[in-house]
Image 1: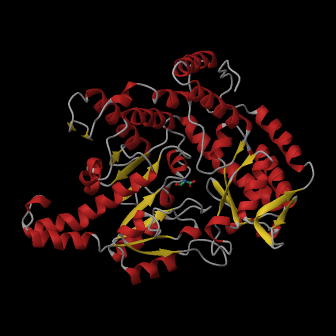
Image 2: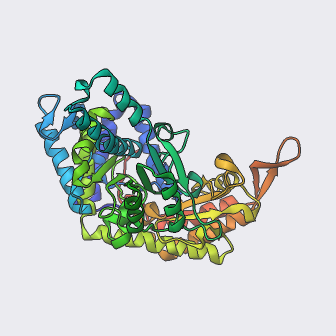
Image 3: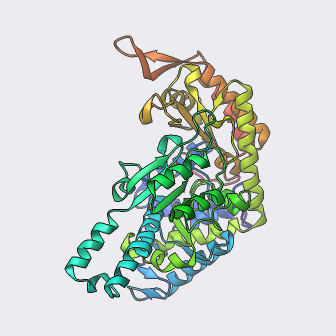
Length: 488
Ligand code: DSN
């Protein structure tokens, strides 16, 4: 399996990209060079960043055209600009594919990113649950119709709501109420963590916290928690305390689309609102979207211009193409392989003495605790990069090294699975990673103390690992047959 789910041959795709680069080069050759160099770099690295992937040529090519030139604030058939008939077609198709793919009553495909999707969701819940009742009590149809005193009361009420989300060091996301993020400033926030012994979500503890805190919004979803979440249980908790359940499925949307997460583990039937990005395990263009139950649809559709700038029609078009790809049976095979490969990677690391947070995985990511090697996440990340393995450092629960140096490394399988890696290749990858960690020693600070950033790799280890990685990558080329016809 490769990332090129297109009936068009690689020669035609090469011709398209060569022509595009020639046109770009005629204006700013350094940009054409950087685009070429990025392909070379991506082809040459063992990419294990859990939030990255490789989109298909069809998705990528859909973004480079004149749809980009159109303003289209509003929604399908209800625009603040004239001449939006083609954007209506694009947005309508993207939303239809999203609804069908996820079995959702409503889809909004305008958000430019995951943060934007979450802001749209937050606004929709505030609009539906705080603003609309206040308007009804005042007998007003619109905020402009409110008397000054009622408007002032409503503004304070909007700013006085509570959100409960998973803490950042337990694997939650910064947009789920983390104080430095706008979400932590919009809401009075509290968080739930994971069990200190097992690292697993403790639903009884979440329930107790929710009963005590009584949030308007209960957030579920994660960016560094290596396990499935029981969304039926989260909905029960939300209902018990009168909260609206928002699930941010940005990381695992591909596993939902590919029907790997079903029943209690599929957020769509259980959450009031689901937010996501399109570019992670879902393998689409860089962007976001929102799915919701009918009662939130009108408020979600007011995302632009309430929260978002003008939609990006070229990206919505690419989302439609990506959703269409994800509706094919081959995507379900891919999604299952993402999970199987993560399990193989986790088992390969465990067998070689690497400690994993929660002891394993049942999604697309694995979280390593590298403290047993005497390393910080930052040292491990840098040493792995020297050896041609691209990862990112990540905090582990109650991380003694904080959010900058960290004690963890987060790995994900979506990208290399798109290149055709299977369990054997991921086991070999585990061997390479364990070898680099075991062969890296912490360095010293200029005053002779133990550094959290400096490190030393054993002689020749980086080169040996790079060659071994190159062998794996050569057997599974990225965009096979795509030839830009230029040196990069
Ligand atoms: N930056 C993304 C990630 O790496 O998980 C989430 O926003």
